[in-house]
Length: 127
Image: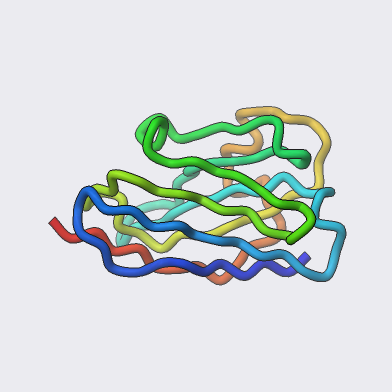
């Protein structure tokens, strides 16, 4: 599957952004989709994941209550709605996909689990 991330930009603290990840080239609902982020000088960090049918989600603790991941398999799209953004959310955000059936939190929260990645979209939150 090929993934294309979009929706990043510059926003003030407390603002909102909606990231989108569009898939192509394969049956989209075969894949768990996640968002990761990487800030300058830091390791890539898990942000949110959604199961193949959209029934299960998992979030980074600091994202809970602020970010919402959703998917529309008919449109081959996963969205990440980010509200109440803070400067520490500044990073390049990547969507990633893995074709596995089991919803195992430790696995889906780990970047090396994923074998398909989008190109990244930059989110900058100013204070």
